[in-house]
Image (cartoon, rainbow, N blue to C red; front, top):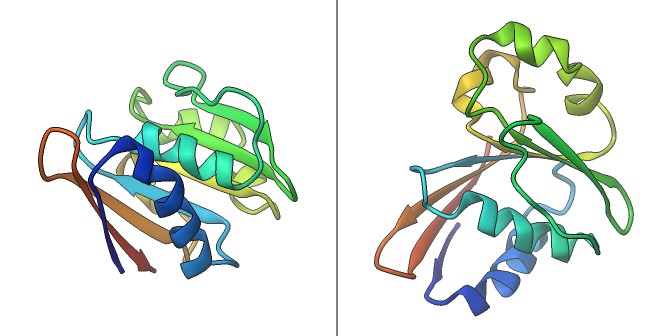
Length: 138
């Protein structure tokens, strides 16, 4: 599935479409260059999942936890980890293999730890404020 987002205001609808495309997915990975809009789209997804609080990047804490409408939402940013041991140290298994939703930025840093099935969202800048979201079930 591909979605074109032409304005920030379109992100909420894109998030709803992604969730409708994969209603039973719990693991979402986000790929894209620095500044592509991964965290910005995650904010829209969290809103669609019922998160009421402010969503921010867990760049230094590695994971932020939010309460969603039906499940907890765990937002990971693995950009700054130096090795897989750091993922083990935060107890990644308790998150990835829970019944809750995991939104994972920089998944390539922990590729070998990812579950077998997940939703992959690639974000590509196609203009100043335009993005193309390529969504696939893995």
